[in-house]
Every structure is written in C-alpha cells, then in structure tokens.
Amino acid sequence: MPLGMDTSKFYANKSKELEVQLQRKNERIVSLETENAMLYLKLAQLRGDVRSARQEAMLSSAELEDSEQFKEEVVQKTVVIHQDTKALRLELDRLKAFVIEMSVSFQLYLQRAKAAVHSNRASYHSHSSIVTALQDQLVQLQQALHDVSERHAKEKRRRQELHNILMELRGNIRVHSRLRPLMEFDGENEDSSGLGRPGTRSEVVVHYVDDENICVRTNKNTKVFEYERVFGPTEKQESVFDEVRPMLQSLLDGYNICIMAYGQTGSGKTHTMLGSHHNEEYHLSHDAHPDEGVIPRATRELFRLIEEKPLGTHSVEVSVVEVYNNDIRDLLSRDTNAKHDIITGSDGQLSIPTVTSKQVDCIDGVMNLVQFGLKTRRESATLIHEHSSRSHLIVTLTVTSAAPSFFGKSVSLESNLCEVGLSGTGMSTKKGNPQPQIWTTDQGPGKPLAATGAPWPNQQPLVKTKLQLVDLAGSECVGMSGVRGAALREASYINKSLSALADVLGALAEHRTHVPYRNSRLTHFLQDSIGGDAKLLILLCVSPAQRYITESLQCLGFGQRARQVQRGQTKKRLPSSAEKVASDTSSGTRPRSGSSSR
Ligand SMILES: Nc1ncnc2c1ncn2[C@@H]1O[C@H](COP(=O)(O)OP(=O)(O)OP(=O)(O)O)[C@@H](O)[C@H]1O
Image 1 (tube, rainbow, N blue to C red):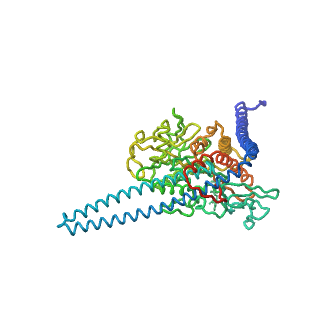
Image 2 (image 1 turned 90 degrees about the vertical axis):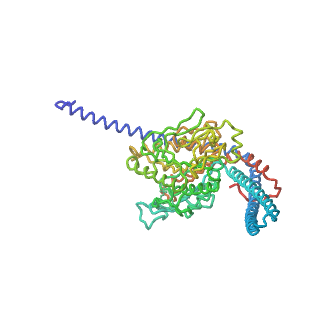
Image 3 (image 1 turned 120 degrees about the vertical axis):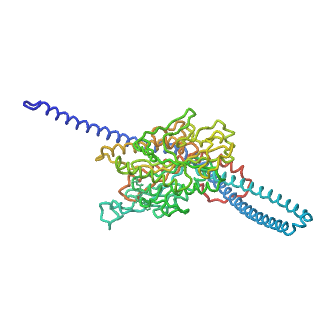
C-alpha cells in the first residue's frame, strides 16, 4: 500500500480491480467455451466429412455393381405401385358410382313401396306378396351396400399401405432446400441502387439450378449440392407444403413425424414454418391463405384427414415450447422460467409431465395457442434475449387414434408394447428405437375424444403419434470478437445443440447402437420423431447473398450429411418394401423406365 494512502480506499480500489479482472476472466472462460463449442462443431463436421468419405469409398464399389439393378428395382416397384394405385382408383370410382346407383334405386323402391302401401291400404292384404318382394329386395340392397362399404374400406387400407411403402422407399430422412429471394436488408450499409451488384456484399452467389440442385458460385469455385427437392426464390408456400403433405397421412398411419427448418438468421425459417411476421391473424376460413407456412398448413391438413375418419376416433393435443440455453421453456404456461425435465419411466418411455398440453379440435385452436406461445416468447425475449431466433421453437401435435386394423395386428403381436396414460405431452419411446405408443381403450383414459365428444370405441387399440414442427435457432457462425455476456452464452448453447443434432444424424447414418440423443435437450426432446421408424424432413433455408456465404455453405453441408442418412436407410430398406410390393401385387406388366424413387 502506498504510504499515506487511506487503507479502506486502497482495499476498495484493489477489490474493484480484482472484480474487473474476475469479470474479464469469466468472459474469457465463456469465450473459450464458445470457441470450444465452435471447434467441436467443426470437429463434428470434419468427422462427418471423413465418415462420409470413408463410407462413400466403401459404398461406391458395391454401389457401382448393384446401382443399376437397384435403380431398375425401384423403377419397377414404383411403376407397379403407380399402376396399382391407378387401377385401384378406377375401381374406387366404379364402387362409388355403384353405391350412388344403389342408394338411388333403394330410394326409388322405398318410394314405390310407400306409394303402394298408401294407395292400396284397403287391399293391403291382397298386395302382401308385393310388400314381401319389396322387403326381399330391400334386404338384398342392404347386403349389397354392406359388401360395397367393406370393399371400400379394404380398398382404403390397401391405398394406405401403398402410400406407406412409397414413403418407405423415399427413406426416413428427407432434406429439402429453399433459397429465399434477395431482400432489401441484404444490402444493409450499401447504396440501395447497388443491391445484388457483382462485387458488393449483397451479390447473389447462391443459385437455384433445378428441382434437385442448388449451387454456390464464387470467383474461385462452384459447389453444387443435391437434395430431394430444391425450391427457388419464387416458389410459393403452397409448393413447399405440397411436398410435406404426404407425411400427414403417415402420421395417421402410425409414424412419428418431425419437420424442421434449419438455416442462419434471416434465411426464411420462420417464413417457411409459420408465414409472414406481419400477418398474425390466422385464417378461420377453410382454405389456406397464400402466405401461410408449414405449421398452419400441416394443422389444416391434419384436421381435414381426421374429418374423413369415423367420428370420435381421433383426438389432438398441442404443446408449444422453446429450447433456450439448453432449457425447455413451456410457452403455454404463465411461468415460462419453470424447469422441465424429460423423464424416463420404468418402462423406458419418455415424458415431460410438467409441460402444458391442450386438447384442440380445429386449426384455429392450434394457431391461437401457437400465437399465444409466440407472444410469450417475444415478451420474454425483450427481457432475456433480443432475437427470437436465439431459441429453438417446437410445436408438438400429439394425435391419439383408435388404431387402424394393421395396428390392431401389431398390438396382438407385440402385446408388450407400451401401456401408458395420456398425461403431459405424451412423449413416448422405446429406448433407442422410438415407436408410436399403443394401448387398448380399456387401459386408456376412458375420456371422450375431443373432435366429436364421442366415447372411445370399446376394446379398440389406441395409437399415439406425434408431429413435431421445429423452427431452429439461427445456425450462423458467431464471430468470437465483440460478442459478450448473454449473447455469447446463447451462441455457445446454440452451437452445442446444433452440433449435438449433427452428431445424432451422424450416429443414425452409421446405424450405431448408441445414438447420443441425450447430449442436448433439443435432440432428447425430438428423439421420438427423428430416430427409429420416425420420418424427418429437414428444410434448409438459404440466403442468396455473398455476405452470408460461410453460413450458407455450413447449412448446405449439414443438409448433405443428413442426406447420407436417408440414402443409407433407403438402400437398407428397399428389399423389404420391394418384397412387400411384390407380394401385394400380382401384376406382371413390364414397367417403363425413367421414373425415380423420389
Ligand atoms: N421465400 C421467401 N419469400 C419472400 N420473403 C421471404 C422468404 N423467405 C424469407 N423472407 C423474408 O425474409 C425475412 C427474414 O425471414 P425470416 O424471419 O423467416 O428468417 P428467419 O430465418 O426465421 O430469421 P430468424 O432466425 O431471425 O427468426 C422476412 O421478412 C421474411 O418475410
């Protein structure tokens, strides 16, 4: 201590100095942790690349031999399915016409009978033979109607099976890419007249090539990425959803589904999943608004499909959560800061009993809750984090249905399948091998189904499947310099969770026995709908401008690696599908070539 200096002042200064040093050290630690996460992400990417290269090398020689045969098989089966579906459609039309004809003649007979009875009441007995004949005809008609409806139901089941085979041929993981148009904000800090001009930061470097290819072109090189589907800048929300629509049928056929938008901030994830930010009124009308994104459209389609099912056989529950800094936050609860744990029951099933789950029976019900959740998310965003994209948004629709007949079969075959209640979000999975939840009505809750208020049909097996719709946080590579405090922590958690997602997809690609779902809350929460038999669709959202080129390449690379999972699975799955088609069809027609499995 310098001579003559006040002791308390000296210690106060010293303490201040130490606090500043401590603060700097803390920030340095968080900064190093984030760098570490970034490096981990890079390592995961590199590992993925090495893995892919190794797999490619191994596969390519084998692939070369059987690719032609494989292609031919797929073409044959696809054509057979198409022909079969066409024939079945014709048969269905014929049956429909027959039913209409039958009901018309039935009405006619009934009218005639009534007229005969009425006008000949006095001589009723003398005409009893006519009445008996009419009654016989009525019985015959009823029998015919019964036969027709049975054939109709059988036909419907067969079409569903064909649909599922087709989906299986397409693989369990699909990757689509959507390139958004150049926006004014891409030219931030630039003269607006120079928007997109060569040499500027807003220059367009990502290009739509065709329905399956997208390329990143720079002065130095051009890199082309291939996906199941690529959407150009002018493609409408409807086109994007058209490719999603078949997955909704699979949801009702017993598969868990996940649709997630991946991309950096501003690349169009929210636009794709929800629609415009400005249009927050969700439309009560039956038809979709052109601006509506995947979430409202999928909900609308789900309720449309449910409407076609027998009354009272399906109910839907919705939950809206965000994963922020690796914590699950319930956006339908007043207390968004409450902690929620994913619990594994003694039977190996997962659940989050504390998350709010509401029964809904129409699109407005769902969208009102989603809007409520988004509002909660935005309000807390002002207190905690400025940009909503700093968290992953997950909307979960859980469908409970009286199982179709083919599920009835699997219940009897696998009677040890889960028998659990309806509480919480209804997350359920067999450890490491997620499956839809199945139990029978007498074991179920015995409460009415929401859609109709009708009671559960007795002794019917019930199936619980999940549709998870995810708007992921921005995948941008956050520069380490200048980012501090809360933003740094957020970036660190986002990087960790996205690298955990990449790891999970990598493990699935290699068919590893251990898939590290639990390395992050995001993957743990989505476990049911990204692994096992579940169907995952990744929508890569890409900005076209040069200023985002690093992020765009990272995003497209992520999608390419995920696609390898799909390719591996398709190859592995084909024989069973092919056999199934072969045994389902007796048609010996020579298929035409040129179709693809897509
Ligand atoms: N395909 C598209 N067509 C027209 N406008 C689009 C398209 N994609 C995105 N936009 C517009 O670009 C802007 C940014 O998109 P959006 O907010 O969806 O990005 P985001 O990836 O969700 O960003 P964040 O991660 O910050 O939430 C919005 O104004 C949106 O309306």
